[in-house]
Image (cartoon, rainbow, N blue to C red):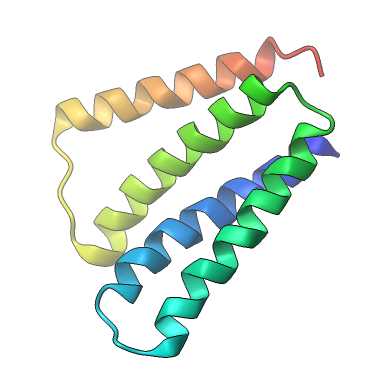
Length: 106
C-alpha cells in the first residue's frame, strides 16, 4: 500500500511542478491556488507513504521519478529540449529508482 501511495505522490509531484510553470504564465487566483493546493496534497501523500517505507527510499523515489517526469513532460507539453547526454542521465535516475525499489526491505 505504501508503494501505491508513493506512486500517487510522484504523479502529484509532477503535476505540481508543471503547475508552477503554468502559474507563471497566468495572472489569476486559480493559477496561484493550484500549485499551493497540490503542494499540500503532495507532502501529505509523501508523509503517508513514509509510514510504510524508509524515509530515504521514499524520498529518493519521489524526487527521482518526479524529476524525470517533469523533464519528459516539459518536452512534450512545453517544447523544452533535452540533449542525448541529458536523456542518458535521466535514464540513470530511472536505473537508480528501480534499484532502490528492487533492494528495498519494505
